[in-house]
Image 1 (cartoon, rainbow, N blue to C red):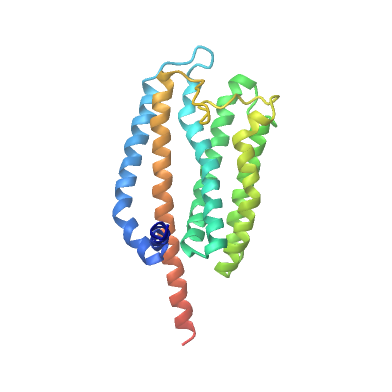
Image 2 (tube, rainbow, N blue to C red):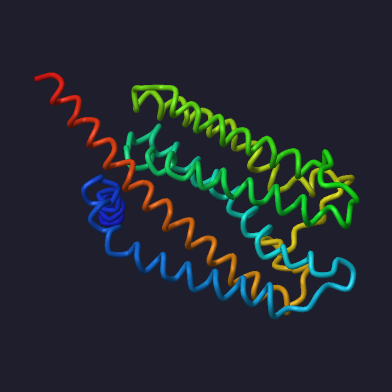
Length: 251
């Protein structure tokens, strides 16, 4: 038991800013390369080498952008929640900076999901927007991303900003969960059920669409990891630079 505790504590050393900068530098090019490979393969396969749907035509191919971006929009907020909780409990600066770094990525993913969903839904629903439970919860999640980023920008003290944004992240997690499970909570919505339910493993898409969808989804995940690492490194450098400037101004 003591050995397991010691091993767990040693893992926290990788969250030390200096150690974090050291181990992320060599792995980032590999993650970016793998992300590019999976994204190009999945999207090219999906858009150019899959047939049109008998009902939706070629618009069904937007699934290769919509589903991965929606998946990442929700899970980015969950990752931010984990980072925020670690900050509140252990006061690990890298975790707070990683949550801050992930927010613009999650905002972009949410925007992509909303736009592609509107384009995909118009032929089926006859409108680009409806106050469907999942669409509405995604819009609220988008606003929470904006509020989170605005709160970081509005507060000068980084520790106070991390505290307040962590609380906001906990509150916003309710809408992240609603965005994921809204179609199960409210059956009257226009949005279809989940294409790939993770709990049951049952799929509503055939293999000819699912395989490139899975490949592009892996690409989105790898791209997210690479961008979070890159932006977190930038945040660490920025904090160091501010500390040096403050030290020089006091001399």
